[in-house]
Amino acid sequence: MSVLPQETTVSPNSSTTAAESRAAKLMKRRSRIRFYEIIVWIAAIAAYFLLPSKMLILTEIAILALFAVSLDLVLGFAGIVSLGHTAFFGLGAYVAGLLALHFIAEPVTGLIVAGIVSGLLGLLTSFLILRGSDLTRLMTTLGIGLMMAEVANQMAWLTGGADGLSGFSPGPILGMFEFDLFGKVGYLYCVDVLFIGTMIMRRIAFSPFGLSLKAIKGNSMRSAMIAVPGRKRIVIAYTIAAVFAGMAGALLTQTTAFVSPDVLAFHRSADVLLVLVIGGTGYLYGGIFGAILFTLVKDWLSVITPQYWMFYIGLLLVILVLIGRDRLSRWVEYLPERLSKKEDR
Amino acid sequence: MLTILFDGIAYGMLLFILACGLTVTLGLMNFINLAHGAFAMAGGYVTVVMMNRYGISFYWCLPAAFIVSALIGLLLERTLYQWLYQAPHLDQVLFSIGIVFMAIAATDYFMGGQQQLINLPPELSGRMDVFGVGVGRYRLFTIIVCAALALALQLILSKTRFGSRLRAAVDDRRVAMGLGINVPLVFALTFAFGSGLAGLGGAMGAEILGLDPNFPLKFMIYFLIVVSVGGTSTVSGPFLAALLLGIADVAGKYYVPAIGPFVIYALMIVMLIVRPNGLFSRGGR
Image (cartoon, rainbow over all chains, first blue to last red; front, side, top):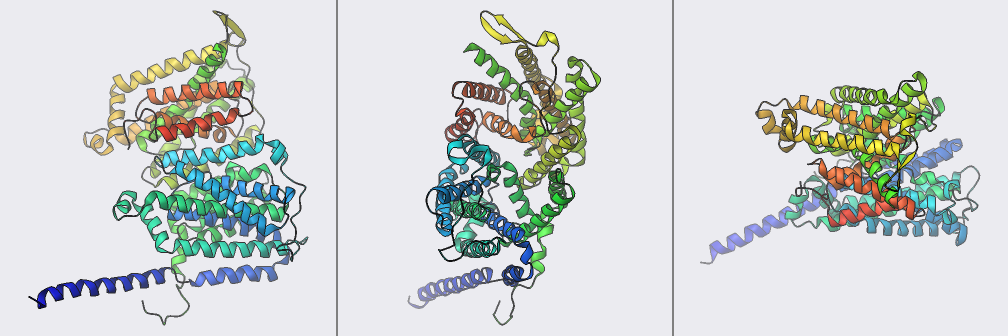
């Protein structure tokens, strides 16, 4: 009477604890800092010392990288194909510009406010993308992007319309570091924000929360069956992505001291998708690698064909898709996963 | 008031002709083809070149626009599109955006970035009075042609053998293939036909919608709205959706010019909230 039931109760317990510890170990392994991540950040700092004349393009890369990393949270993890991610980027850019023009010129405050406002827009619009199929999502995201562009164009009294918003200069960062003429401070500022943003998103993406997002992407019905609250998760992920996209927009405003209606143009949404495709989706750093490659390619193209670089960007997209974009980004898997081998597998 | 309604109907009819090819591509092949506008633009530019450089009559340009766009569509379908039918939607989106970008840059290169104008034949220009309503002759012509086309489409789909094959392939590709229907051929022909219709729409719309290299981007959202609001299973769904969109857009731009562009977006959002699967869908897919 006593022996058998005890055994049956003990063995599941021990197996659940074993499974839990194994799961915890796997999660830890998944979120471990990879070798290439360290290289990326070292390279970002090294670039400051080695390429002092290239600060502007490096700043551009850092901003695009933050934008792309935020899209990866939506696309690579939650699996939502968005054609209107630039709505948040542009909103952030305008908010930062207006704030600097009318209220506070201090950049970090502007950055945070821009992030919050974009996040609010993300929260509001995320309820629209919950509905329907991929097609309706495309339509909605594209529509939101176009609508924002139209708002910026129509409200010329606020945004400057087609002429853009200018006439403000961002003050010193935190009241200490003044932006200089060569963009050195701007670069460091952008890299700092990129680093912090990527780390936060990394923490989110490689947590159980991020795993559940991937489950939703894989099969939303099955993930609902194992009690993943799909709608809620998507709303949260979309909002977070909007916050960082807005911050990227704010960075652009603050480093260039100008907002053009171009920040809301459709091609930006397409560009950032291309960035992610070049770098690979679903591991965040794809946004950074992609931003480096994309910006260099675009810079090179716009030197050789100033007017028609769009053609080659399109060609690149077509070729990438036809040869299979997965193959391109698989190189990351060949990199050593970690520096030391002493931890157990 | 009635004039606006009339203009709206003409506009909606044009949108329908432009978008109905996309309906088929999307509904039939489940392929998100954002480059549909590029085919329409091709048709428009064929007309412009033929009329302005070679002085060919407008009436000959319309079938030429159809044929050229259909041939381009057939060529691209056979060489590129067919490899991506099974690809994830992200791939299809990226691919077709790439095509759009290439089309825009190429058009800009060959034709220049300015708005293209065509001179309509004299009997189509101007206005006339029908029961006290000012009616643009060209718009009347558009409505008649598009209505005839829509009717023909409906008849082809519902009465001919090709139509029933197409519908069979829409409903279940595998079973249709099992029944001996050459689905890839049906796909290719349908794709070409849809592209041709888009080209025709582009040719006819050069006067009403305008024509410049950014055409495919400008009207991408309209096509998407027509298709996703109208649903992809019938001809009448997108037709009504296109009419609704056309009337709403024209009326919005006329009555409330300040917020005119937002009318269609508002419409889209309301539609999505009320009927997420489209106005006339046969239930969720």
